[in-house]
Image 1 (cartoon, rainbow, N blue to C red):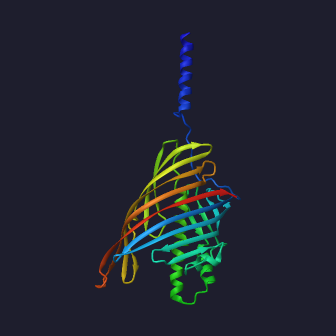
Image 2 (spheres, rainbow, N blue to C red; image 1 turned 135 degrees about the vertical axis):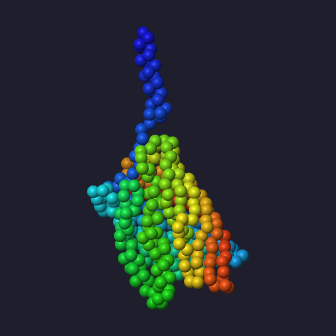
Image 3 (cartoon, rainbow, N blue to C red; image 1 turned 90 degrees about the vertical axis):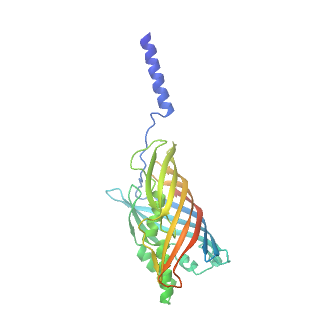
Length: 316
């Protein structure tokens, strides 16, 4: 009789452990794409930047809405995926407090305003290839230089100085480094080991944007349900260490910026695709101008940036 009671007690304890999650199964999160699959990426960013230059306040409110089509055209032996990325549509609206407006809508060409809208107008339909590993790290960006060359050719700019200025803008926003940052801002989430609810892991990544920033990220698996891993992220933002000043003769431009970002990611466990991402960010600091020109000298101007990015990825 005592043996039966002991057996029943053991079974009860085991059941409690299982249902309480103490024996919860771990999940290995990794990018597991399949050749021939297609995805649609919609990314919306809203941002406010305030700079105070020589006691003059410059405030810029911007909204960017970009859509891409992605086709997995190859998976190699090391499980690196080659993804053809095509610009589908682009909507940009940026308004300064002095009334100056940049506006572009690929679906409504008549609404376009500002010189940069010419750049955006030739992007839809253009494509390039990203090679990415199962760990979410970009191995290679292929065809982006050719894309930039096509864009410049279609713009038909004769003035060489203006052409160089526009080329820099294109490279800064759509060049290889910009593409790498943009992709890894979505896919840098994967932990090295399998994780269970409540587990925490950390990594570092570069921050997408006009300032040379990096993030120290802390991820937590909040919930694992119905094949979706819900992950929270909290990050410390700071100026990228070792970043050389930007030289704009006769001025050297450097940054001293700190801040935070936080957000939520929903990862499909089977494919590793981040189906939904929302990130809020806020940081501030100084832009430092340094020059050997006595009339310029050394000056600091405060800057404040805040905004959010929402990304949705769905199969086609």
